[in-house]
Amino acid sequence: MSTSRPGRDPGTLGAAKVAPSVLSADFGNLSEAVGEVASVADWLHVDVMDGHFVPNLTIGPPVVASLRRHSGLFFDCHLMMTEPGRYLEAFADAGADSLTVHVEVGDTESLLSRIRRLGMRAGLAANPDTPFSAIDGFLDQVDLVLCMTVFPGFGGQEFMGEVMDKVMDVRAAIEARGLACDLEVDGGIDEQTVRRAARAGANVFVAGSAVFGRSAPWEAVEAIRRSALEAR
Image (tube, rainbow, N blue to C red; front, side, top):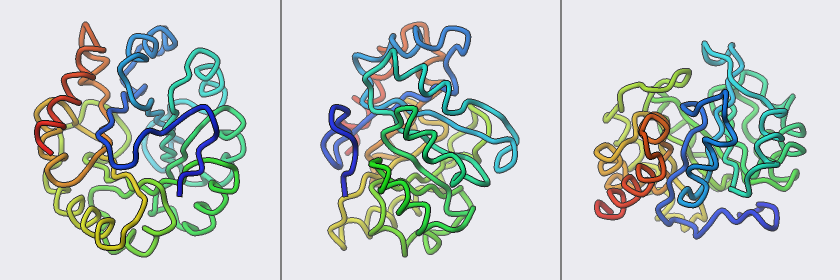
C-alpha cells in the first residue's frame, strides 16, 4: 500500500535498503553529515524520541523540515513517542515520507489510518520483548514493520540476535499473505550483524554508529549493503 508522495520514491518493495540513522550523526553539522551519505543511502532514518516512551530526547518536526531543505532522500521517521498522534500532521508538513509508530502505545489502527490519509507510508514498530502476536493483526494495514534489535533510546547498543525469531515470523507472514510490506531492523546493525538480519528476512537496515562513526560513512553504507546482499 505505497502512499508516499511523488518525487520521493521508497524504492523497490522488498529490495535491500540501507537507512543511515541521524541519531549517530554530528548534530552540530547535520546537513553536511547527511550530505556525506546522500549519494549511497536508500533512505534516511530519523529517530524521534520524546523523553517519555524512551529515556532520551532527540529531534522534532522543525529539524525534519530543516533537513528536507537540504536533502531529497526518502525520510523514514521513527516516532518513539507516547502520544505520536499529536504530531502526525506536523511531521507530514515538515517533509516526512514515512512515519512508524510503536504498537506498544496503543490506538494502532487509528494511527496507521491517519498516517496513510496524510499521504505517507505507515509503519509499525515493536520493541525486542514485544511478541509477534502483538503486530500480527496489523500487517495488512502497514507498509513497513520495524523489529527493534535493541531497546530504543540510545545509539551504539549491541545487536540482540534473539529478535531474529520474530523477524522470521514477520517475513513468513508477509510472504504467506502476499503483503506489500518492507521489513526493517534497527539497532546494532553493522557489516557483520546485517548478515543475520538479512538471512532472517529483513530487507531494510538502519545503521547509525556503524555509518556515522566511521571516517568515511559513505563507504560504510556500501559495505553494509554489500554484506546484506551476500547473505540473502
